[in-house]
Image (cartoon, rainbow, N blue to C red; front, top):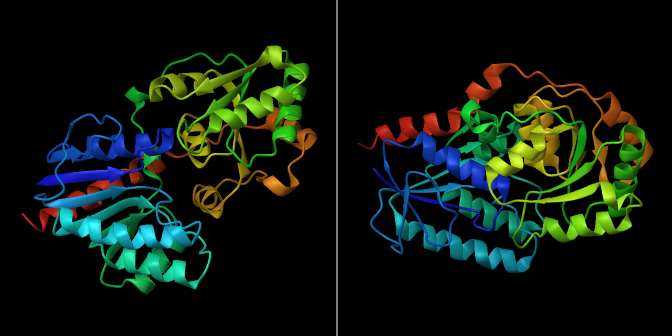
Length: 325
């Protein structure tokens, strides 16, 4: 089949990995992406907007609407996506809280425009099955858990702390956390910037570093390639994860991590994988408690069945598409 692969195109590590893993699992099809999308192995870039067999959206929080302008964009997307192909699918998404009833109505209309969907938490599965019963919907662990061993660098643990940062973080408390870790261990802190686009993790990292008293031991790590970022993560002894996929990747690579949750999607994921340790919150985050948790963090040692189950997003889509051949 000719599949048009769509998703988030603004230089975000987690979303880029989702796209890459989806394309990897669909290598028996002809895959196309738009010219403004990140380069995806096995995919050809095209300006075409019609003539495909399947339109596939690979996007985690892509159904979230932040303001009333987003409602108009949502309705525009429904019309645009219908032009691409007669079969429309989504893999790897989650449904979050709505800002108002109009936003919820727009999201419902969008969901109902698809034929097939996979989600990464039980709340989203129940919501879609209730509000769009004609859509075939299945649940699997986040697709990034299916990251193959050969894509994971063999970097040595150098004892550093990795902090995944983003806008809206408690900058002063993160700076204090970095300083305390440096003072207690003598090791550097890496500020991991997963998003180099409009969400601008780099400016957040610069604010944290500017507030630090140990700037000489703070390194800002910008997302250039997925391999480079994963290599930096692997060199860390522990991760303080604010971004959703920083926790997923730490769990996948068996790096001890402490979550700093800003969204219920992180709570749902951690619950599904059996995470029992403390989850820190933005509004109550404190450096002393965080450093204590980081110093005592242990690897999660996830069962490999989680990694295998995460391949289900693409496997289920392939089975669904086989019914149209």
